[in-house]
Length: 437
Image (cartoon, rainbow, N blue to C red; front, side, top):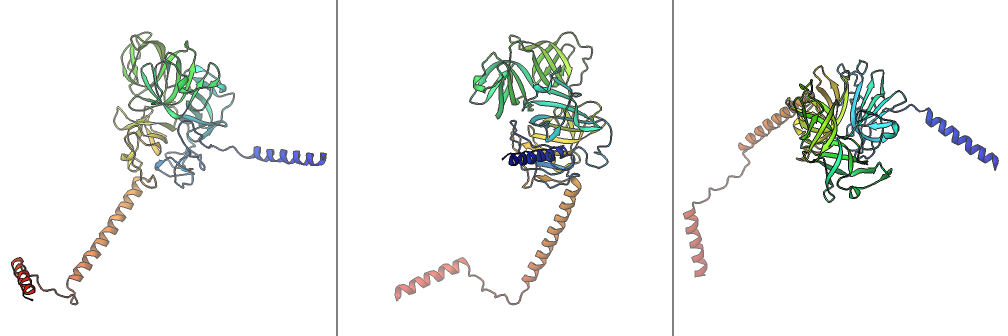
């Protein structure tokens, strides 16, 4: 009996040793965090495509629909001249936490350790503060592309609840509309227990994790109830700026003093933290902190968000303007389409997209072809030319065939039909003959 137990323990230890000796993967399976994301990344350096393509780790330019498991694809390092991972600057990642072990964001498994700088809304935080459904900004160094050097949890907004519409899954925080995803997490940080939207009351303080659509609605993947003395804040693109006033998502805030840097570009993402005045509907005495999608030294970027019109023309995601010139029919992308964009930043801060993963269709509808695989313009133009040549040949052969049939001698010539008056007379004559019989 003891011998059998020893054998079983030995087998268990051997199995564990084999499991732990396997190299860590750069990708991780995406678990539900209100996205309904079923994709997994594999191959290459792994920005999981979540699509139905069959790439091998490089290339794979295009627009892909979410679903199934993705393999290969462009990833962080495609091996081409524009996306080689051997350069400097590191990688930026912005998206929802969809799993742990270490932390899964945009299909990437990012490690962290004691040297990782962790913050939450600009304040020092720890690993225990990480949770599913949170939005995080991660920066990795070029030498260690899958270890977080800096990790910041950011809330779309936090403050008192004005009202709740449980039937619609909506609530308003400081006048800002929030739509909770059906799979969204509601958690009470005060008691450390899971909660629900029905348990949230007007006046309670809510910390909203989610992504903002172009119409200003924050689509929440997580709601955390906190104590009422928690700071009120909002994160997003600065829409209008003056010396003492900043607007984000239509919410007005006044800063503590006239800003010396009032020339803050309108496309910059900022974090505003202050005191909420429900009478004036203003975030007063707000501190303004920059909340950029990526750091200035970042070269490669993976960003998740809703497609919006960019004030500089074109479209953007999370305040970053997109360069879609290398993709196929980008007209298929609609405002408020939830996407994950992967590519390389140019010297002007534009994201030169190598892949756009469509995770949810826009509210106005998203037309995706049957395979959801729009290749780059060169391939598309080549296919179009070949298709036109083929159609032209078929049309030419068809015309020749029809012209040949026109001169066939075996065709039976039919007698010309009589005029209508002649047909009428013949009908009357035949009727009279039947009567005489």
